[in-house]
Length: 500
Figure 1: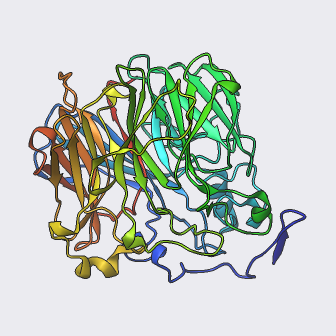
Figure 2: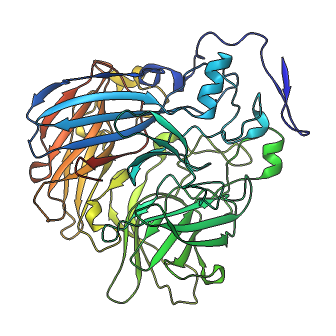
């Protein structure tokens, strides 16, 4: 069976659809596809959940529903909702009903080709996104995000998919970031899209959205390189766009190649733009030596008007599965990412950035803060951490990890004022996923509350929720057991029940 999707590329599919998942790490062990939709009430709780926690933890995981017809089928987004009230927890899981998911269910086989390469698809899609990277709550809806397309909107209670969401036709770009930021004072959502005019285009579209969904401002920019901008930073008066040296080439896509390729010759760029009232020519593209920027912790302006950006940075290609043009990629166990602080003078004509300050020495990522202090000077940072000295039984769990090198074995809390680090170690057979911060009700103190994270237990091959009180960080307040195994997720967020 063949299907011509463009003049440049012809996709060849097997006459019979695959009946099982390939014997590859990303489909084995803990990463074996779940393909679960359902709900469970009254999850088993060890310890006690404080009565002042009342809300829902939403998270998304990439979870394939059908075996791929090529080696690396982009994976469907599946949404988890953990509702916590009166010390009880219920759980619901549902796929985002994307065009991909619905058409593949109808065809009873995979139809989407390589990651972000439409020229390898079996059929033509209008919107080929998998909506599998982040899930946010905005203006009464859940928005499932992947940075290659507009969001999909979902009902926060039922998780039913409402459809592709273009903000009533206001969305100016073809793409939408997986990491929008929220101003805690105004409720404004600050967003952007890169490759905003289509695959391989250098265009970046920046926009601000009022709490009621009305677009307030749109600014079109042209980046110095067509690179990935996975996360970005926002201060009170500026936005900052960190560009990874993972670059896209349209001709490579048309030849059936990968969307991204590591470029060791390309510097790490940071675009700086006034947050309001900007023109395209107002952007400044600062640069630093070739390195890999990860997730942002926070950003703010200091007393001198400098921009302070705290971000994960590695001197190696963290996305090692997308090597350089010669096929070179670092050994995964050699990759270290650290929280580093850049200080940028937005008025300077010198566009070369000074070396950043290392804020935390450990190998860390997935930074979360008390979001009430976003865009402002802050003190507390929570994150995933990998410290082999803590006692993880790496040989014992290696065969169950799935996907290769171990991820993170502990949660960290960095006090940026004292530089003291607290560590929560969940156990010798456990790995942690991204945490979320829950403010303590009635407290306005930064960092006073709870940290909640999904944890992989490789001894039981099931998932757990671990709840920590930030006043007693090194011990779990409660461990909530799931009767299922949820694959490694990407991002999620906490939504209080009193949020409109």
